[in-house]
Each structure stands twice: as structure tokens, then as C-alpha cells.
Amino acid sequence: MCGIVGILGVTSATPRILESLKRLEYRGYDSAGIATLEGGTLDRRRAPGKLENLARKLRDNPLTGNSGIGHTRWATHGEPTEANAHPHMTDRIAIVHNGIIENFRTLKKELLDTGVTFEGETDTEVVAHLLTRYLKEGLAPHDAFAKTLSRLEGAFALCVLISGEDNLMFGAREGSPLVVGLGEGENYLGSDAMALASLSNRLIYLEEGDWAELTRESVQVFDARGNKVERKVAISQVASTMVDKGNHRHFMQKEIFEQPTVVAQALGRYLDPNAGKVKLPDMPFELATVSKVTLVACGTSYYAALVARYWIEKLARVPVEVDIASEFRYRDPVYASDGLCIFISQSGETADTLAALRHAKEAGQRVMVLVNVMGSTMAREADVVLPIHAGPEIGVASTKAFTCQLSVLAAFSINLAAAKGMIDEAQEDAYVAELESAPKLMAQVLHHDEKLQEIARSIAHARDVLFVGRGIHFPIAMEGALKLKEISYIHAEGYAAGELKHGPIALIDEHVPVIGIAPNDDLIDKTVSNLQEIMARQGKVVLMSDDAADEAEHMFAYFKMPTAGALVTPIIYAIPVQLLAYYAAVEKGTDVDQPRNLAKSVTVE
Ligand code: M6R
Image 1: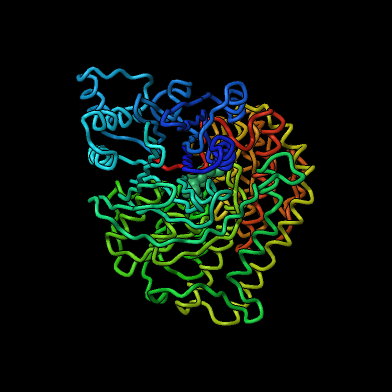
Image 2: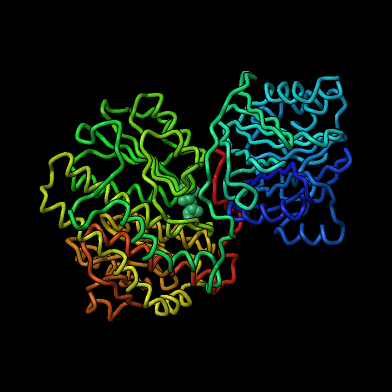
């Protein structure tokens, strides 16, 4: 999603803004731009496509000035053209925006009626013209900005410079994140700690409805009513050095191969193998009293929630409901008294998940989050935070965050089962030992990646691919399909293996690869039977299993997995489906780390 950076500085702003925009690339974008203010005059450069296009423009036609704002745009209203790229400018102001102005049509009509002309189709331009109108009516910048904000509905993070005001920058946050960075004789605004990492580690996270007035020497924060408020300064842990790919060709590849290390790190925070126990942070409620668990998330995080349902119900015998965040609050969910709602989000900023979290909180539910970004909005609003410790995930396709989410959810399930008295100390010890084995087994799978490369080559030009699994591996089938879709653009679906004959089997012919996820558990025979049904219809079956080698002889391909228990298999089977997608995308030559149309941090509903 869109990324914002603003610098009110004492040295040339453009190269510093470009560096911050580079840090924001991971969020996904399709155009970019920068505006600077020098000697009271605003100027800008914008370009569709990658940042390199903007950098080229800036080399040909540099922008001077010590203050400026920059933006990476993920198109919502209007195509990713130069005219729609931010910053938007009038003769008085330059503005960048992340989010959606929901009442922009009404405001646009009002402005058109007063003779304003619009350059592009974005909702943001109405904010630019509204603010300009109030300034031209003679309002002071502070009052004009406040009045503009009072007219806006929807979700937004804004950053504004005003011509003739060399020592002034405004920012506002409503629904989309915005952070103030504090410098020495300089101050900054950014979408997140990552954007500001090379500028400052002293941050003020604006709260909903907050807006900020910055000079080089001061920062004042106001709430939605315009009252001056104090917000605490947090120290960011995000490293100022740019995360790099190491020896890998893509961030996604690096992140896949990092998994044994980061999962071990995550488990190290939650397991005490000597005591044979799970250690969770202190909670403001007793886990033993939890009557129902509701898990809510989007995309890959949703699939982690689906896996966790099996663990929680099996180990703790607590009923679990799982929902897609964008559906959750609109179906008017029935909350249980003593219910625990768990929201899972790598970024901690996903708009739908955040809205669902607030819905649950308002309903008096206990709210826990699993996030990878500690300063994120969800982390700040939850009663309990379980960090997943995956480290920065740059590839848009989530990989290591998924396996870290699963690892933390597995630890949580053991802990809940113990708190509920459903497992005794010896069982808890055994489960902890089982989970501890995950990193080693993950490393074994990664060791055989060349076999997956070979299989990926043979499916890379298929039009459709199906993934099937049963029980706890059904969500892994869906995750495999999502990975393949998002980076290789091959149509893929994940099905419960037993469900195929109720419809999807009609799709099977000799051109359709079917990936079967079938660890040797109590469902393997049934899954293999379903795969036989597919082979009988000429489907090209690729089996991933630690057993069934005999049946595999007749299949299109077989990928041998290590044997593991049910707390670990979903974690290790995530790897071959990730690698399959990765190598298929490489074979097709797609943009693996920033696939078309996708954003890393989805901050609009
Ligand atoms: O940051 P979140 O975990 O809340 O993001 C949720 C989804 O947008 C995310 O998992 C998405 O599906 C990924 N691109 C999957 O690879």
C-alpha cells in the first residue's frame, strides 16, 4: 500500500527521501513521486512504475530543497499514471496520502462547482484543493489544515507542505498509520518505523484522529477535536541499515531459507525446553477461563489461523471459530462471554483485521494479537501481544512470517491446553520437545530444494494447478495455492482432498497438476485414495509425503518429506509449497518480490 515520507531538514531532502521510499518499496506500489520546498516554492517529480524511473527523472532534472515529501502509490482511484501519482499539488500546497477519502465524490462536486479543475482521478486531489481553498480564504495554515480534516471521511494518512512556509509540515492520521520522527534540528513523518529508520529512532506513533504540526525545532500533536495532546516517544528497534538479499536472488528466496533460524528464534522466546513448558507473556486475564477462541486474519495469516483451529480444538478442547477479517464484523458475530479473540497479522496494520479487532474490543472481548511489527497499530491496541519474531519480511508473499505465526500458535495451543488442564506436565513436555524439532526438520526440507526446482519447472506453464490436503493440511493446500497465484500468476486453488469429487474433479485432465499434501497421519490413506481418483482421470499428481512411496511410483512426481508429529507437519509442509511457487515464478520471470497488483501492508478496506 502507499508509503509516505516527509522531511523538514537542514540538508538536501531528495536523496534522503529516495532512500526512505526504497525502504517502503516492500509495501508494494505502482508509481512514486517527490515534492520539495525551496525558498518558499514547491516543485515536484513523479513517475509511474518503479522507483528507478523516478530516480532517472531526478537525475535528469534534480529537485533542490531541504524539506520535501515523498510517496509510493498503490493505485486505488485512477490508474498508475504520472497524473495520478503523488504528490498532488496546487499553487499553494503539496500533499501525499495513504488511504481512501470515502466522501471524495461529494467534495469533488463541491469543488468543481466553484470552478476548480482536477488533473487526475485520485481522491487525494480533493484534499489538496480543499486545503488550498481554506488557505486562499485567509485561514492560517493551522486552521486551514484543521478545517480540511474536519471535512474528510474515510481512512487517511496525510503529509503536507505549504508554499511560502519553509519551516512547516503537517501530518494527519485517521485509519492509516503515520509516525513522527524526531531529529536534531530536523523532524520527519513516515508511514512506519522502517521508512524513518535512516533518519531517526525516536518516534511518536500518532493515534487515530491525531494530527501533527512540525517545524524543524518542534512537534505539536493535536487530537481529533483540535486539543493539544502529549504522545509518548518510543525508541524504534528497526535497524538503520537497509535489509539486503544476502547471496539470494530475491528477498522471498532469502526469507524462505531463513525459516529454520527465525522459527528457532521465535520458539526460543516461547518454549522452555529444560522445564518442558511454554512461557507466554503475562496476561490481564486467566487463560483457564477462556470459553471460546475466535481467530481472525487475512490471506496467509488467515491460513495460519485455520491451522491453529485444529491444534486448539484437539489439545485444549476449546471451541474455535475462524473468520476472514473483511467478513467478520459485517456478519454481526456472536461473541461468547469469556471469549478470547486472536488477530493474526504480519504487518499489524491490515485495515480489515484492525477493524475486526476494534469491533471485538468494543464488544468487551479479550484481545490478543500475533504480529511481526512491534510498533504496529494492532500491537498498540491489543490486551496481549505475541510477537512472532520473524524479522523484517520484505517479499510481498509471506513465507517466514507464516511459519513463525504457526510456531507461536502451536506454543499458544499447548499453553492453553495446560491452563485448561487438558494435558498433564508429561504431555506438555512431550509437545514442547516435538515443537522444538521443527527448525531441524525445516532445514532438512530446504536441503532438497533442487528437486522442487525441477518439479516447479514442469508446472510453471500450466494454466491451473490444484493443491489438496486433509485435516490440518487442508489450510496448507490453500496456502500453497495462494503462494502460486500471487507470484507466478498461475490460477491455483486449494481444496480439502475429500471435497474434489463434489465438483472440482471436473477440472482434471492431463494438463492439470495436482499437488497432494499427505503426511503419514491417520488421514494418509484417504488422501492417497483421492489422489488415485485424480490419476484415474489423467491428472498429474505431485505427492508430498514422508510415506506412500509405493503409490508415488505411478505419480507424476514425489517429494519426500521428513516424518514429524501433527504440531510440526503444517510448519514443515509450508516450505515445499513456498519453494514450488518461488521456482515456478522464477521460471516464468515474474517480479517475485513485488508481484503485480499486490501490496505488502494492506491499509485500506
Ligand atoms: O500483514 P498481514 O498478515 O495482516 O497481511 C495479510 C495478507 O494481506 C497477507 O498475508 C497476504 O495474503 C500475503 N501477500 C500472502 O502472501
